[in-house]
Length: 339
Figure 1 (cartoon, rainbow, N blue to C red):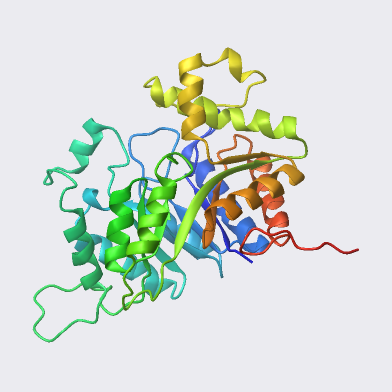
Figure 2 (figure 1 turned 60 degrees about the vertical axis):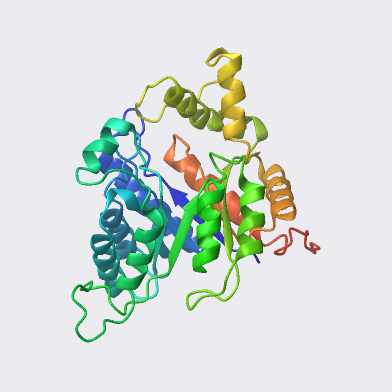
């Protein structure tokens, strides 16, 4: 069966706070572990009141310490915001504490607005050196050599799978050239997905880290007892995207009954395009939607995300998604059901 994983932005909902967000994150991670999800990733964002995963490595440690088998990692760390040595030390520490369970996904975007990016990059001009920074970071995970002037302690010789993340052709080409696994941000920027996958698979060069291409696609999945209920839950994410385009960086809003009264036609067009990779509905709808997505794009792994206001409904959504996973194989073909 194709692996299913979870992407969590540690949402901070209206009427709640960051401490509750962290409790919900750990609860969801434990839930995902029980349901058989393969990995649980958290993403670096800054200056966004509705997303509490800014200190990504710290939160990864919190989740890894509260679970026992599920892989935990960054989806991702925005490398231009950090010195490669510091990232190697952080994830070398995590991988030493939780061996065999830590992933490091690297992104090229700032994960924030321009004023905050400037505040983060006090001694850094741009993301233009991203390929060199990735190579430098990878070297820090290699066993230290005699006389090596700078080494990551912890980090040198520690097993940390490194992924490249992206929403463009740039990261696809770089992941292929370096022989790294690749995760595409199709959950919010699907336009270049097919081209990026083609380039990654066609240009991939085997490396010591990976012998053949491995591509993971992100997919919004909002599942509920009925299609109408799921569509209502999905309005939380739709409102959040509209608010971002309006320059309103607030907490995660509750769902509404009629999204059509909330957005303009132009906003609707933009949001529906950005959220084109979304499966919303009851169990049957989710099964069919995920099956069609796998059949069309052939990912090696799916990373599901669900920005749902109510925590119990969010847990239930991931439970429904997990329940349909065993009903089709890696190619998206439905298995014959008996009994």
